[in-house]
Length: 247
Image 1 (spheres, helix red, strand yellow):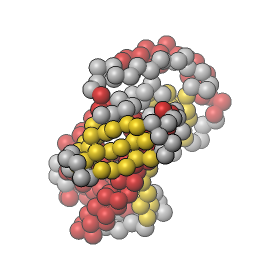
Image 2 (cartoon, rainbow, N blue to C red; image 1 turned 90 degrees about the horizontal axis):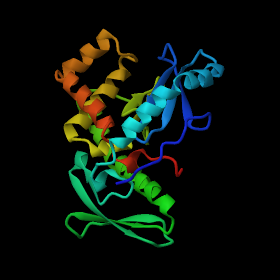
Image 3 (cartoon, helix red, strand yellow; image 1 turned 135 degrees about the horizontal axis):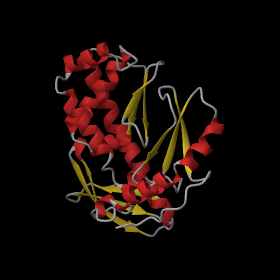
Image 4 (cartoon, rainbow, N blue to C red; image 1 turned 90 degrees about the vertical axis):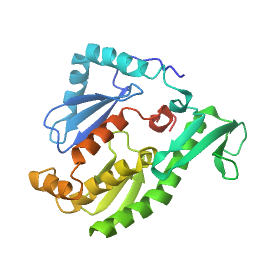
């Protein structure tokens, strides 16, 4: 169980994300209590600080509410998980931590379940090592899987990128780059496959128009169910996946 103090919000305690879709200023708070201001791309940054100041009470109340939800979570949801389940590829890991100067994560596959040995003499780097390991695993497994699904359905893309986004499971750019969140490995296989379908359909329609959803539903009629699964999963990510204050 890890309790993070909720610090007062100031100009140094929120991030700004410029959006081409947003039509007004918006606030988002993640599970760690980090505050993000969504700024329409045509709006000046000078509007941000007054907007944040105007909503300070709302921010403080909701940060406390959101972060407190993690206090009773099991150890696997914390910053030093004792187990990790990569449901997408059906692999379970137990974790062992050792103070060493190596700063590395080693997989011991001879044990059942597999063991991850995390070696670091700097506590602040433990989470970073786990996140880098997850990125490597995602590049190894998601890239091949996506290629197979695209080939099966007759879609194409130019490039794949694996990242650790905090607010998106995936995206498709106008240049043909399909970006996937490394945390997809923590989701069930059918949910991950649906996310692939969702993003690949953007290679035909770069929007969420009725024609886009018609294409999605022609491939996955139960798409609304999977949309709910993705939304719910985003609210239940382990802290070690989300944490970015050590980077």
